[in-house]
Image 1: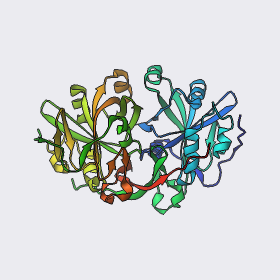
Image 2 (image 1 turned 120 degrees about the vertical axis):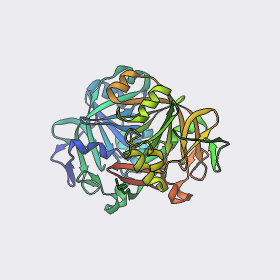
Image 3 (image 1 turned 90 degrees about the vertical axis):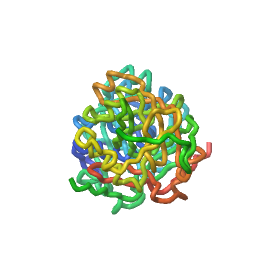
Image 4 (image 1 turned 60 degrees about the horizontal axis):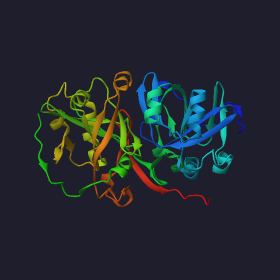
Length: 202
Length: 202
């Protein structure tokens, strides 16, 4: 069991218009997935999370049957997807490798600190740059055959130092706020240089 | 109709072990999707492509009902997923915004050049750093309700200057070979700095 404090939004955090919420994961970051049920909070890392639709905004996330977080989501029907930062590299690795089943103090051991957002009974991870509250859209065949879960995004917030006005601004933000992109075995890349494409003349 | 030449693998391209093939998209790049049916080849860009399983390796990709590439895939049951590079920024933007339905010369207009790989009746895009040949796993409900397609990866190849021994090596490759990560409206990021996490002592 983890204590969380529900409060007004912390400094730098502001709501994101749901129509722009897919952009927080459109560039393919590794995410943190969190959930709460029956007084238990948990957080895991997931590289396999992807936007699915614009309106209403939806996403997919792959959750192995061995994960404690999946069991919480199956019971609560709610989860949060969060975009961790370069500063959270070790935290992301640790919540992705430790299991609540084997370490009851996983969150504390991993250094994950949680906060609440009014109106959402979910544990949100401090220090991320994006938070998406999702309602599970039950699809039993996908969940059982593919470990594939579909969520509708029902709330979105960002750290405005990294994402504001519907866009990431990594190019003028602290490099410690860049997103993480996992390859395998603890090898990550940070997101890099901004590259605006120029539309060809019609 | 597009001419392709099937040949021995071009310079720098080598097969990737299927057990490592998910790593080519694990870091969330925007991809090119190509398909062939009835003498028609097409290529589109997709930011919503994600690994789904390790063994056998599978992936998901979201294909709007308006895309010509989707129709080819529904008919052939095959598609290729490719990882384009910084050098292909404009090509990626153009195949992602032009439609074969409105521009019969879309591939030529976009600068996409195709090649073949023996044993796979698919058009592969030159100049990418990764190629995944996929067999559609038909899931009519997902395809109709969510535009969500599942493929089993049945062949994988990489440009060994960027991906070899089962890992990306962007840190010592030409920056023009880095992967692209689309946010919205033609705004991309290149993948950035390598960040190996250190596992905590047990």
